[in-house]
Image 1 (cartoon, rainbow, N blue to C red):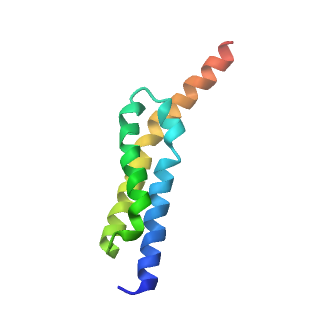
Image 2: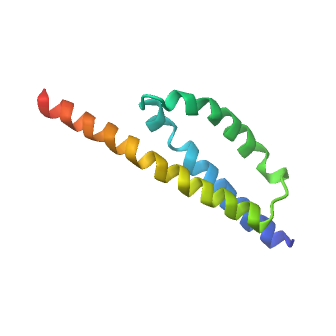
Length: 92
């Protein structure tokens, strides 16, 4: 693997992890979101050490797919939470 490939893999993985970590405030508001938040400490730790991990293209692709699946799974709960919040505001 060339240095250029390593850098590209690093950027792609970092982007995936940061995208997930950016959801932390929203997950805190979900009914079962707190169970996921424990895993964020692991993700943050991994992100700090990511530059020391050797990743192949297939590793990066798997993580990108897993990230996309995770985001898709959260669409419903986050949308419902947003709708409930709007409903509460209308009732007040």
